[in-house]
Length: 307
Ligand SMILES: Cc1cc2nc3c(=O)[nH]c(=O)nc-3n(C[C@H](O)[C@H](O)[C@H](O)COP(=O)(O)O)c2cc1C
Figure 1 (tube, rainbow, N blue to C red):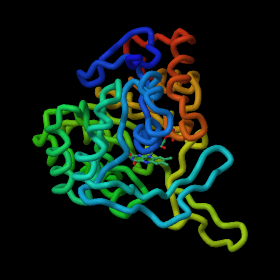
Figure 2: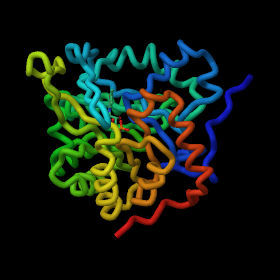
Figure 3: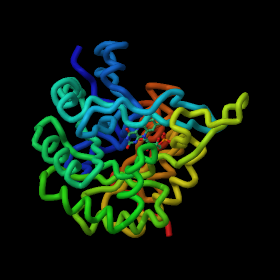
């Protein structure tokens, strides 16, 4: 059987010139399409849960990630301190990219550099691959020491985007951190430096104590909070960004239903991404897309930002 496209929204549309058959993506690092296919076979391709697939963030060199434990469940979400384990650029291009290229939807590759040079190398190498539709710059991961710096500051973000912009013609999505003092100012800086879209939010920094020892539970000490607990914060930041930049906004943070997704679209997002909910329900993206469609949400044009 040939792969079926995911549930369609009322209308296909383009994100940064890339045709998509609906508006539901995954949050980087929250759905392992390669592992899912290994476990469930080609059924994953036939009923793929997202309209575009965002890879987990890759770095130039391989990384083992943070020491365990790496997860802690909170009453309305989860803390993670995964620490970006990945095969590095060469490992990704050689081993993962050929498998991700078989997915039935456009591929977005998420990259993170510890310097602007590293970021530029990643963008140039990933961007020249025809399998890659768009590139997401992760300037917002709070789990890695240097990750916060670029995305927390408008000028640093602008310098990073200016450095990488000439390295690829592929659309660049800048993923914003909710920990910036003014995420809309960072979004405006990214837009001014040549970004094609912004996505938000990444996780919020948090900590949990081991009840037996009163010491930090997570191996890295602290981690990133995601899930429904952060949804109101994400919604406010999406609205603030969408009212101040002309670029498409990919909204995420605690989306668990079509109604949640519709809220983000009403707040000014062009697309939404599903993250933590996929851990509870690996088919969540498909369900949320179907709920959005059956709710009759008007998706033919980007929603007007609330004022
Ligand atoms: C286990 C886990 C791993 C993640 N890994 C990445 C990553 O590699 N790169 C990235 O930009 N964001 C990463 N994120 C952040 C998500 O993409 C998303 O921005 C965040 O979780 C908020 O969405 P949610 O509340 O729907 O999970 C990760 C989140 C989780 C929970």
